[in-house]
Amino acid sequence: MASVSPSIRQQVISDANQCCEYCQTQQRLIGMPLVIDHIMPRSIGGSSDRANLAASCYRCNQFKGARTTAVDPLTGEPVSLYNPRQQTWAEHFAWIETGTQIAGLTATGRATVDALKLNNQYVLESRRLWVAENWHPPNF
Image (cartoon, rainbow, N blue to C red):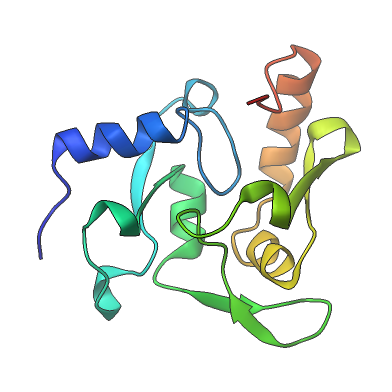
């Protein structure tokens, strides 16, 4: 399978304002470079074309894995995970608790928050510190 070229990788991260496209964490806060997520995983036929790539923090990428769907915790129905190339973050998610937690506004948002563990205890502790320093949430 084709790997992602350094120039495409840089373009993806630049287009994402150096933030994870799932949890919106800024690269400068996570202490490591963002990785490239194949929205439709290569293991199930996804390509390395720009339209299938998203900037992701390592944590979100690991929790997402090869999944494209998850269960909406409200309805119990399977739904597609958030697709940053086809959907708008603010339509599916919102910051609550003064910017420390992400709420899912739609079935896709709720399923993504749950599947990618966007509000796990470790990131909540970090977000509290980032908010106190006015580093988070990002304002674009």
